[in-house]
Amino acid sequence: MPLTIAAQFARGQLWGGASSAWTLLAITVVTSAFALGTPAAATGLYSTKRVLAHTENECLNLRKHECRTIRSPRVALKPGDAARIELACVPGHPFLVGWDAAHHEHIGLTLVSDRPVDLRAGATASAAPGKPESVTVLAVNHAGARGIVTLFIGCSAEPIVGAPFPGSKHGLPTRALQRIGN
Amino acid sequence: MGMQRISDRFGRRLLWCCTLGALAALGPGAGSVQAADACAQRSAQVPNNPCQNQVQAPISYTGLETNSWAYYCTGDHPYFFKANNGVAWDNTCFTSTENIVAENDNFDGDFTNWCVDSEWLVVTLACFQFNPN
Image (tube, rainbow over all chains, first blue to last red):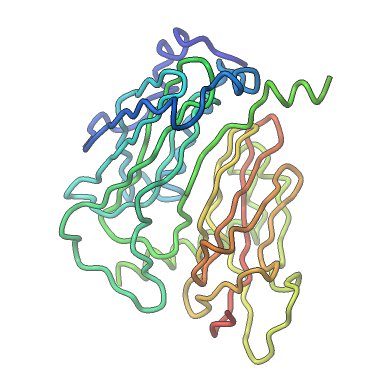
């Protein structure tokens, strides 16, 4: 069911449900409407009220005491804007497990930092990395309406071997899909 | 020891989950997941290189969502054979495209949930003891 922005803010669990502590390194908003092309052509594709909820994939199957979730503040993007959101793990849980987000359908998310070190086939991790691992995600507004994104990362005290890691997260353009069905 | 313990926990937990049909505990759509044999469906046979099905951690999708994922083979079968159809999942709601350029003995690709409801994605990789790439 589509939600208004006001309703989304009222439903704290839509954007929250995680530790209140966060280690936000940077949010860089890049007004790149010119570089990306005007959003006018994409206005009709997306249902700009739909929100894709946070589904806790940042910690996969790990138990709460094994993986700690850290969240970013809500980031608002104007039409055509892009933002790099960087979040870091904390010293007690320095190893990055994964990331997830709550975001409007028309906000596309792409990983722009390196994935955690591949620890398979005998590779080893230090007892604790020199600094807590971090992730940088590029959020892009593909439509002609304002959009919101909140980033979540999962952090563990021990390194994880072979856990799936996301590279991007996007909502399908449901307004366009509805046209196909009509 | 810490790394292997976490890896073993992933392996044992997921195999237990899928073997005993406990996927219903995962929530919506999980009951529709079927046992997958990625080793049997691969397009090229690799002689003298044992293949092992490795079930990956379940991923939760909202309805009408598309994400890209890197999946990894682990343990004593740590190699995924790229572009060999060695990945299996329940295609009731999900489609996939493999991103071969991004792979490094692992699987990389997009998975799209075309269903309106939230669904669980459970992927099985065909994993090899020796590097077939």
